[in-house]
Length: 284
Image (cartoon, rainbow, N blue to C red; front, side, top):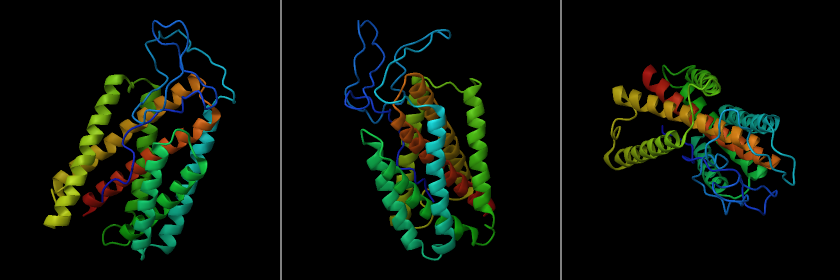
């Protein structure tokens, strides 16, 4: 198995003047605030412009719509993850023996994930459709693995492991053990790119050379690769937490909570897939 997360970089919330009237913080040396020009899909923390002291409050802006709150992020994330769980239940019950359809759903979900990742504005319908199709794929794949010899209960262990990673990273982020800086972000992005490229090369070796490719699916190397995948997912969670925190502090529009929910869902799917792969290798 390989990660199904179609997005390996975090994009910022919408920040063009045509959406919700949200302007960026003043630039260093500039007399007035200037709006962001367009959305860069590789910008991780669009609101963190320059350094602030620990006691300095972030500048406040007046958007045309109600600003995003933590309740909005929690509610949208709950809806998105709930859709994934509902789709996974259907996939587990009805598609375990029809993986062809489930794989098709997963591919469509990947395409939708890419589309939303490069859209300037979040689309709730697109995000929920992605969540439903991704859930179908995850449920069918998990049910299939659960029925294999020595694999009974592996998906539940992967779910518990994903929850443990989320809670641990949230605690580490809130207590300051993990601090998201520009250097941290660059490191995560470069590491993720290398991880994805190695995964793609491994798949090519499997397709054309047969067997286990480069050995990333079994043995000690597979275990190491799985651990790296889980750690990368945990680091992406820190980037997601930083985006949510910055968005709330700088008054991002309420609609942007859908983008936060989408990013968190992508990261949790990544962690679950890597955790399931790791557990499968260990059990085998």
